[in-house]
Amino acid sequence: MTCQTYFNLLLSRRDYSVKELEKKGQAKGFSLEEITEAIAHLQSLGYQSDRRLANSLIESGKGKYGKAGIRRKCLSKGIPPELFEKVWDQQAELPDDLAETQDLQAKVERKYKITDWTNLDPQTQAKVYRYLQYRGFNPREVLEYWQMSNQ
Image (spheres, rainbow, N blue to C red):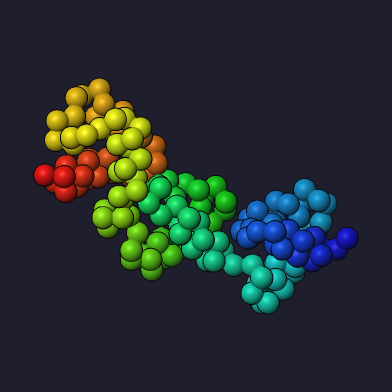
């Protein structure tokens, strides 16, 4: 099996970043020159694109994770930070517009049995902060928005 055939097989299942393809190619025993040529050929045909992968990861993380969480996911896939920032800036309607966090708000309300956002006890508030922070949101901003919108 050639490097080109191997990468075609991989990309037929899902998108991979250049870094991921390089790692997989090296693990399979292909030379760096073969890998570079195969990736360049795939990019010229439009079969591989780090931009498309970053866009897909951002789209799938919308409303579930904040910018920091999505950035971590992209960086773990080998997307360069500069490319992530470009793609992020091009997508204007992300959860920075906090109105799109309604599904997240409903999930948090169910999980922590919250009926009134203005009178959260400190223990529950700490849990909600950790929950939001883990997902890459700015907990203070999100909680303030939810408290204001529920008044």
